[in-house]
Every structure is written in C-alpha cells, then in structure tokens.
Image (cartoon, rainbow, N blue to C red; front, side, top):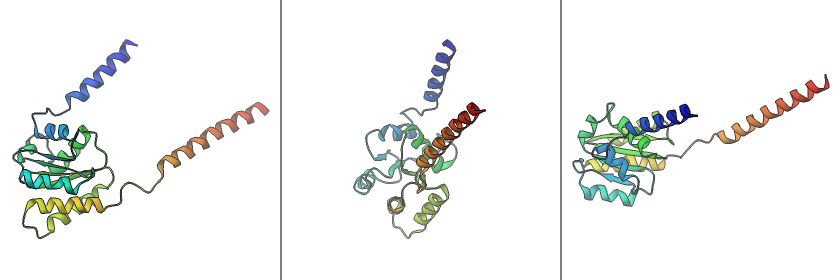
Amino acid sequence: MRRLAAFVVLLVCAAEAGAHAPTTAIGRAVEAFGSVDVSYDPGAAVTDLEADRFNLIVDGNPKVAFMPASATTELAGGPDAIAEEVAREASLDGSLVVLVGTRLGAWSDDIGDDRLAELIRDAQAIDADSTHEVVEALVRSVQAEPAGSDTPWGWIGAGLLIFAVGLIALDRVVRRRR
C-alpha cells in the first residue's frame, strides 16, 4: 500500500514539474484559459485592442492565444508544439489557435493534424493587411469545420463488451453441460 501511495505522489509531482510557471508566456496563456477564451500577452504581434476583438468572434471554440515571439524559447517545436502544450496544460477540449510572434499555429482534438495544417496554410495565403486578419481567417475556418468524429466509438466499445460477456457466459454454459 505504501508503494502505491508513493507511486501516486511521484506521478502527481512529475505532472506538476512539467507545467510551465505562470511567469512564462505559455504559463500565462494556460492560466488565462481558466477564465477567458482569448489570451493576450504583452509583446504579441497584435495590439491588445485587436486581440480583444476576438472575444466577439470566438464563443468558446476555438480558444485563441496571442503570445510574444519569446515563447518559442520556452519549448522546441514551434507554434504548433506551443499550441499543443498550452492545450495539454490547460486541459482544453476543442481547438486552440495561437499566434507566437508572427507565426501561426494550432491544436485541435476535433480536427485532424493534416486538415489543421491545411487550414493554417490557407489562412496564411490570404491577402491580408494585418496579422490579426490572418488569425481571424484561421479562427473562422476552424469554426466552420465539422466538430468531432462521426464514428460512434462509445457504442462500438459497448457492443464489443456485451459480445465478450456473452461469449464468456456461453462458454460457461457449454462447460457445465460436459
């Protein structure tokens, strides 16, 4: 029992050790998503007024983070990796669009990686006068995507479980008759 308790404590400490401090750009975004849908960090490539406008556009999904370019020094892998890390640490569902400096990235548990990369490329290809217009194009594209999968995995899993229980019961009946 003591070993199990020690293991649980070790897991909790390890999970907390992987979290970014609230003094980092990633940590501030994670903290902000506890109460808002749009996170703005001073030093971002858009103004706070431009970022604030996104509160009128997003309604919970996707969440949007405007981060300074210095956020790339906190985690390797670029804006998509930063988006994934923020989403993981903030326990987000749905989608997240990030602007790290002037680089666009995104994460989603509703949209596949290839499709998300395509949406980012499409947004970057628009003829925009400003960075926030590119972000808005991506946000609207993500909002237009059908959410989730059409595959009813819950029902499939329940059906397989019922089938397995039925096979076990049938096996016991056959063994008793022998």
